[in-house]
Image (cartoon, rainbow, N blue to C red; front, side):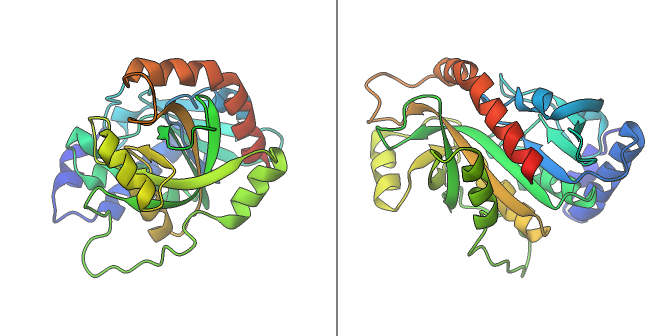
Length: 276
């Protein structure tokens, strides 16, 4: 039932495709409104199981506009989860599309637009990333306070001007620290990827104000704000960034750090979402 070609057609309204995707999910899951959306990056996948009962799980490729997961460690499904006894539902997006996949910015942010069309007012964006602060060892969760977008692109089309002053919600970061007062925060820098950053690029990121480096999140956050959602961003430091780490970088290292930290950060995220 995927309507892939329509989303790629520049004459098609991407919000119309998002509304079609939301309508499909409502029918497939039996949930007429989702209140919160989650994008679970590397290491964060276990949070969905701790949130509550999974009402339904749908293959991403069955939903208009969505693509198959292309990165090991991500799952190709969208889940509807009842959040404990709150009566609210979370849309868990396990099939993130990265800009480096070459499928276009619309694909990258389609999940955000679908979540908003499904009724979500809050989105939680997670990722695995490199850290510039040597005190943040592998497995450290860090709240995103702001970002620097080095992808040279935007999900906004035409003369669309959106204020990003408070893009990463101070209210939600305060709520997260009520769950874990030890949480630090930092500025996330998105590079285009898929190669890891060079040591010189990491030094540049630090000099322009960055604390974390990765290949996702910023475009999704911008699209979420355009759609009117409140954004909470949390990074999992899976490794020290190039030039800071004493060993070469690898995706296997990212997966290993995410797996080791998984139970702890998943419980943290589930506790935060139950309070949203």
